[in-house]
Length: 458
View (spheres, rainbow, N blue to C red):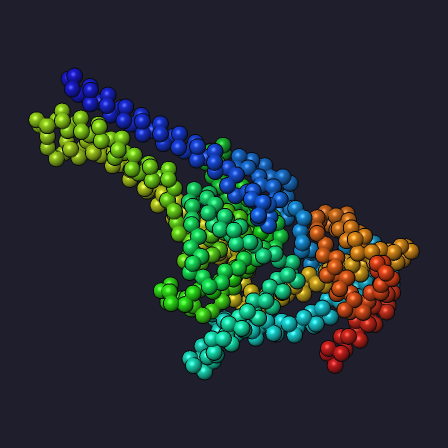
């Protein structure tokens, strides 16, 4: 009887140690997990984005869904919305309302027509690198030097289109940091970018992305959590040649993807699976191994006490507790992988906007829209100032446009005033008097744009 009580006592002590160590590791992991998807590093492009904590379930605003926040480079408006902002002060029969409607329509069509040549050029440059293009064997082969030069030109032209669409290149260290950030399933990935000849990421629009997560405060029901992220994200990759990466991958092609509402901590979901390696957390490794090490004294003592009447059933019962605890930790890690895979499939299905050539087309469309919006905003503010007898320089124009968007659309935009001024000058709608800017009357602007339109479309 005394031997049995001693064995039970040793087993209780071993279980207590396993439970205590696991709890301490879990709590320390949770404490370090809270701010893991913040943009804390000063080298990150989006380092100024405030990150809601994991424990805060109340959103900063009452609006649901993805929310833009912070100062945006892009103008988050459509042409119709901007037209409504311009015209809502005028009565339906006001001649200025009709005149502005014609100016907005002509400006948008002219900007699109002027970019059509660049659009075709980028598409032609992408043809040899399109993974979805038809490969006619040796009929379309080019010299390696010509292909490298063509690739360099395509990337340069594509990056210019992303700049016009107000995308910003995400720095390489930011991409690596995002991949290493733990996700909601406590899974951590390591970047494996050696498989790429080229990898570039472009982001547009700082936003708060909502994702469902079970909360113990609500009885483990789902609630929406907010994470910092990008409203749009472009991923460009080209694999190195000579690597065995699977039958679906073509090493001499450039893969393009355009996503929406990408959380910083979910960036690894939007990269090819060859770009990341799953890393088992140290806590899970310890939880799998700890039953063996902590259970060794108990098992040895039990075997010693039961040596006189040892049989396989008794030995199996002795080892069951330790082995089952390690298997439980491994199964939990495996289930987390399955949940993450399911979430990744769901995200890619619903959040993918365009692939390959469609991505090129979508970026060019966004560039056309942003060019038109910036030109129209600058034209409107300079025209209003001229009507009031004011003279604006570039800095004043920048401030007036940003104030107009704040007052009328509750938008915080970092207006690209120099780009807008340059576009109005190219169209011939802007005059300079030293540092001061002045636009022509609306009737003259409309006639100039119509003349340019007829030159492009005779």
